[in-house]
Length: 251
Image (cartoon, rainbow, N blue to C red; front, side):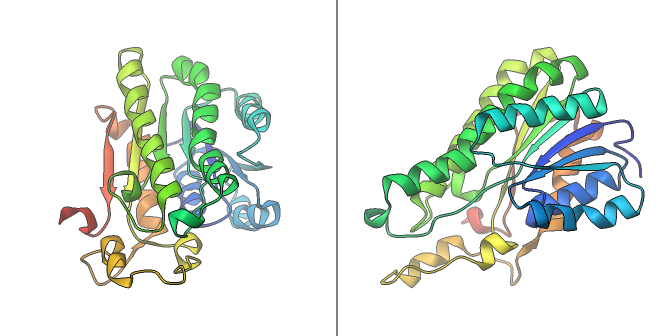
């Protein structure tokens, strides 16, 4: 299905995980994609197969903590494709540690990558989305819905993403721009695989992070949800927090 034919999309975090799967899903559904990531080599590798298929994917290195670079990326997308229809804020990081060992630098870094970048990119994209009647899909987390141990900065940042998404949805619904957030739980991605358990952690608390299912979600399953929310099929969906967590937050 070419449900995104003629649509221009900007995806952050596109070198791996959910961002890569989203880039692939939308490009193969006809979208023109500006794919961004700080990992330039990984980004090129991720996009290579799509370009070989004849998909319209342009890669752009992007450090999402650089405000001007974020604004330039949005401007570049509009220049390359003639407009912007969908913004997918997927870049993210996690810092797992005891709260009393979390440094101010760690806190600022997590907030800059996970939350402040979403503000800047939404702010830069909004004038173009108002013109196109476009939409935003932000990746929050179950960590934005419930407290998770040893992830205080991550929880705070993802809660900020969720509430920003809701606030924008309310403010701009009457002007034709939709804003939604996805709250994944455990997803089989490098971000999750690389998590380290802090020394002296209470392992019983990790049950709060576990799905009820005997398996994790895949990046492709989250990308499918992004594609739905970004598509015209979801024209009546805005301000949603779509939870995909294998029942984690159901109990």
